[in-house]
Image 1 (tube, helix red, strand yellow):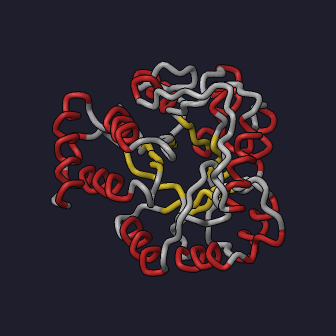
Image 2: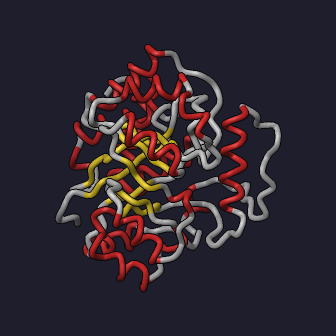
Length: 296
């Protein structure tokens, strides 16, 4: 049982918009179905086609009215929208991108946030959009405790821990004094210690920047079985039974991975982490009704 508020950060604010809104609504309407003290800390992702986006390629375009409607959908419920501005190959010339700056202008209300990876974009946001809290992204691949501590010395709102450190007892102990500013990725499906992960992020960044998805990254550890049950077997997974010990040590921000995954995977993750076990069938039914006809 959580003795303090615990914040969960949900994926795909655009692609999983209806699912996320259903969960936010049901947490308000049926709080007894959800784990005590759990709150939605943010919804993260990108509007399609934004070249600052990283981590996963998202093609397409969103019009101004759709951007405004999506921001209002979440912000009106007190939930920040967090942009994954983690493209690792950005250059100075990309900072003036009209679409990305439009998104920032529309979202500049002191509520919404930005994940960052590169210094060039981070410095630009600090200068031009100072009301956005900045979060240091796990895509930086900082796997040494000293590197994480160095990030925490800066004025980041949060630092997302590389999931290779999720179960590193020495690292977690050293980071405990800063636990309130660390975010843990609880359900990553990628292989821990993969030497090509940074290369994969760069390839995805180039594909986003060049609007080119024809070349898939030749991942040596690709796992075609994208189910949540399979994810629970992964070494970096943090189970519900384990999360209590993290909360006791002061960790209070947990991130659910899901961008680029099937909706069923994301739904199963939400039910597992957020909902009391005996209420999962009921909440699954309510979410299904919500997605079908919008009824709460």
